[in-house]
Length: 136
Image (cartoon, rainbow, N blue to C red):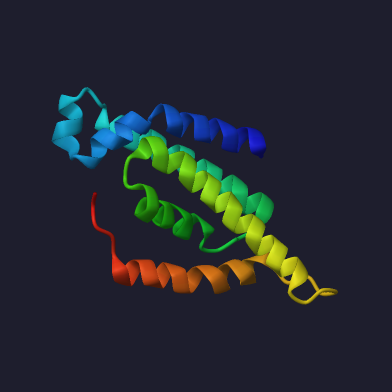
């Protein structure tokens, strides 16, 4: 599982310039030499593969994948050179904190991590949706 996620992270880090070019529009990205359709299809395939693998091994851990990138976009901005690694780090930190809380909040009983992530992530995600973000 770590090997596939690591390979996907490396793929997205290699393609970060292409994703930055796609932010400016299809025509601009094509003008910069990005194969727009290929980058989109490959990105969707890799993201779907990693998501399917993570869900099959770990189960559904809600809102981490939604909240972490949005939080990092508000803090760091929309430059994918920094946003992709920061989102990965924020997601892992959120999951670690959620797991720690799930194990310690009711000491002898271990709560499901999904319950903690949903409890933490849903209000935060609703706040981010209602607030929106301003491009820097």
